[in-house]
Length: 156
Image (cartoon, rainbow, N blue to C red):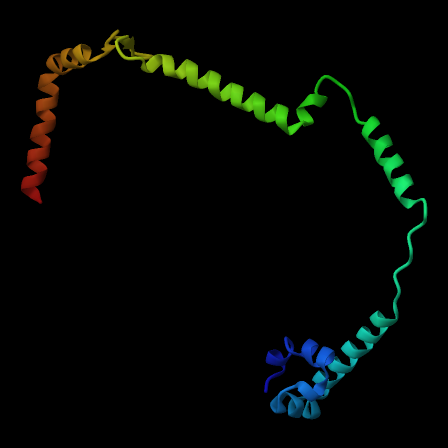
């Protein structure tokens, strides 16, 4: 048996006793001094932990803790930005901003109201009629694109 595969099972040997270990594990613990020392060290640690007793808290611990928490709460800054620390306020503000942006952007997409393309110097309106007028005025350009597509399909 290899020491690396035993490392995970050593704690079970310490807790349950070496009598419950597999015969291969018992044989390895007899022949390997490093693993036997590790088991002995773990047993000593467990014995020390068994002897250790938790200290009892002071009888006034709870009262002092509550008083300190009350003092810390009252010492928090009360500036005009202190309301940002509340998650409900931040969530509500983010939701209101999202709704506002949605309403502003949604106004651009209303049907029946042609809009001009932002940044366009030609003043073309975005509507079905405007699209058809654009296609008609640039028919020669689009026919050149069709010729390019036909030439590429012939080479492939």
